Image 1: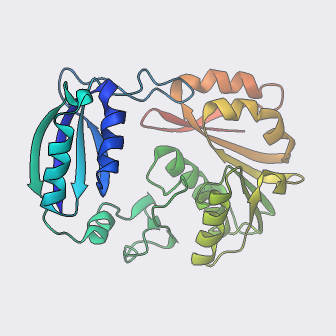
Image 2: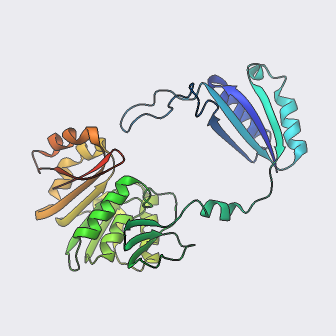
Image 3: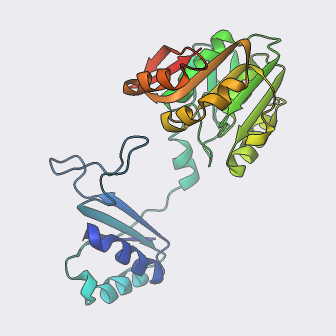
Length: 292
């Protein structure tokens, strides 16, 4: 396998990527050419805000080809094109053969939620100190225990969900990790809902892999009132969902919300004030957990 590396300004990235694809590149990746320098600039905005830019000022484009001949042909075809006039060829090298599956797996280690509660990828053995585990691999749906919002929710579940809790709702279930955790800690009836069918499928598969029983479906599955309502989404949809989520909360029940930045606490308190009083109960890396 051979890698062709190019340097391109922001306005040339899309056309250059399309051209490389048409020239039989196996893959095309784009990185900030000024990363870790004084010229680096953010590409993604904060949750709920538009991105400050659609692309970096200068991008490093890497294209993989199956043979050196294809890589060199691509370089020779691109060089005389008008759109390549302000781009630059910076290298063409052979890529050593690697076990890509093993390399990818090595990036994901077991995650400690508490000293005795761990999230463990299927290719790892559970740590000796783990008394409760969820087996979960990185996949298409959000929620593998590596993000602070997920960890805070899981810590809350480990502390407060007890055997026999009657009804739990995981709204915006993603991978199903929160619903699975509730089942592991003894909740009896669990509904996990999402607007994405892929998340519903992931939740059902992950629940089966962990030997727990729960119901998963699209949002209308949520019916009636629950002793615990969990929602790990983002602040903007959480504000919109305030009436709906609170309508599902049983008297004396717990509402646990995550996906909220520290600076958004007052916004959430105001949005939920007509229905429930929220307080911050945990924080990590600029994110907070709010509960009622």
